Amino acid sequence: MGGVRTSDEENVPPQDSTEGCSLVNIMKVNGSIIQCSMGADTTVMDLIKAVESDKCGVVVHEAHRSAVEPVLITEDGVTMERHLMVSEYDIGADSMVMIVMKRNIKGSYCCWMELDTRNPIRIDIVKVALEITEDSVSINGVEGRICEDGEQFSVTLTKPVHITSQVPGSRAFFHATGCQFTFNLTRDYSQSWWYPIEGKFIGASSQQAGHAGRFKARFSPGV
Image (cartoon, rainbow, N blue to C red; front, side):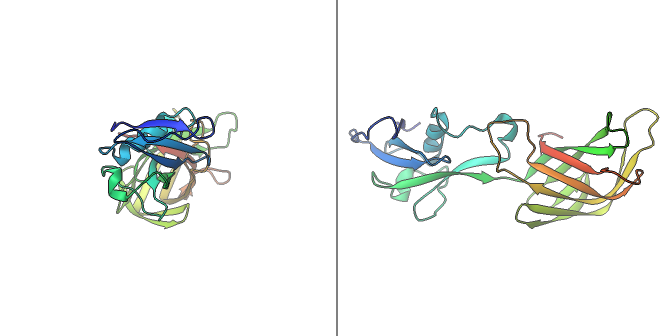
């Protein structure tokens, strides 16, 4: 990194800038402030890495690293590009920048769908592939369109997807024409147990009643 050093303002008093370096104040997600000493060649990415390496910095579990990414924002609300030098943003000793977590919904997901819930002790769960790109979405390879309303999303497929049970002897199926789901990243990023996507497939099921079609999903490259 370009000579970046950190200190927590709650525990370490402000330091004078060393020769060729200056201090920048960064407000973390939890509201505390960290000071970073930066050189002339320090990039925005260097500052992000410095905050991530801080013992009280942003902790994101590997399971959620594809779903969120840290970004720095200036006092004027400008998002700082990772590849640029910090000096290009006229950041000085009296400046304050904020690190926030930016949502990233694009990517490959593995969905765990409840196909047959008639036996609550042994619910039949199948895996379904969900792919979201900049302009389209697909379920098990069948393309569709996606509509967004805040954290709420709805998908309509160009043709139905027939999902069948993998349990020997089972005739359970779901004829999916789309799905609805929420993308939630308000929980603890450091914990792996929760799923950023939760929703329900829309269509016809072999099960007349119950919760067939419900699913949870998380990023899974290569699905």
